[in-house]
Every structure is written in structure tokens, then in C-alpha cells.
Length: 260
Image 1 (cartoon, rainbow, N blue to C red):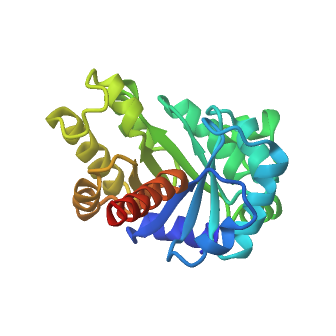
Image 2: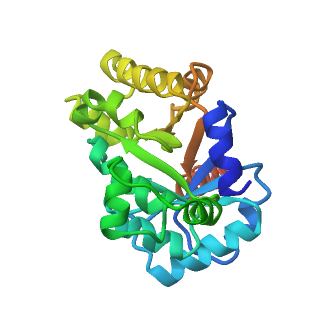
């Protein structure tokens, strides 16, 4: 799946499947390509990847038919342009809380390389683009997906306005930060957390915007499936390091048990 196909699937309510990749190993893309996924989630907010490593990862996964979607360190349009220039086919912006942030990111992701006053006026509705330029920008950015993290109480309070920004492809719930903002850290089964997740999913899907939650906790499979049945179609399951640890831990235990 490429970025254009991912964007269409998210808006149409189709399930799309991915996982977070933290390893820059050149062996990984071939393995991941056989897992039945549509995209990979590469994080540069919490994972120390340099620009060269990131570009190689994006290029390798795209060549395997997996759309590389990169979370940038902050909701900065220049950071978004940088990872797209490096080969990303989608951007996830962390801790977004205002529609103004989303509009600026829309300009970076959907209208790159237009910048400055012309872009600001267009995004504000005070300017127009020449047909030839608009056609060029649409074609150039067809593979660029815009996703924002919803992970705080203020973001939920501004959610209706955030979702009203055109060309937003999906929202991705950050469960850890959201639970902390709600005052119930890591209590993912708490009724307040459950209600918040369901509200975000419902509002996004009512606007034909994709919705999902990144699930990494061990008991997360059942709620992950339940949320998907409620409309969450951006399925971001686990992390390569967690999956590796879980599988190897079980196998080493089985060997030790067998050997007494």
C-alpha cells in the first residue's frame, strides 16, 4: 500500500494494519513485508534515529509496498517537510491540541513545497492558487498522508475544530499521554479512558476521518478488537521490540522448563 492508497482507505473506513518499527536493521524490511501489514509506523519523537537512517528505512519499506509513516518530534510543519523529503509517505504529528496546528501541518504535508505568505494566505482562505500550480501540488503530494496524535484533554475539547480542517486523513490516540492528561495514568481499562477513546473514534468517523489507537500493553488485544468494531480503522499494533521480547521470552522459558 502506498500513501495515496492509505489515505483513501482511512477516509473510506477500511481497516489498515501497521506496527511501530524502532530497529533500523536492513534485515527488518524483508521480515516485516511478510507479516500482512499495510504500513509501518516509524517514530522519531521517542526513538533516536538520525535523518540518514530514517531515509534508508523509508525507502526500504516503500520498496516493499509498505507505506512508511513517520512521527515527527513536534507538530512543526518544517519537521514534517523534512521527513517527507527523506522518503516518508505520511506524517504523524504528536500532541496536537489546536486546529491552527493542523492547518499549518496541512500546508506542509499537502502543499509542499509552497511556503511563506502565499501558503499562509491560501490556508486562511484569503488567497487562491493558479490551476496549474494546484494541479502540480496535488499530484506531487498524492502519497502524503496527514495524521495527528490526540493525546490530551485539551485536544479532546478542541476535537470538533481539529476534525474540521480539510485533508486531515486520520487521528491516532496516544494512550499513555491521554491517560495521564485524564488523571488516570496507564489505567487503560478505566471507564473514563474507555469513554474518551470511544468519543474520539466516533467523532472522527462521523467526519470520514480515520481513527486509531496505538496499543502496546499485554492485555490490549481484546479492547483493540472492540475499538476496531466501533470504527477504529487505523490499526497500529505493538512494536517490533515488544513483539520480539514477548516471543523470545516465551521460547526461552519453554526451553528452560523442558530442561528442568
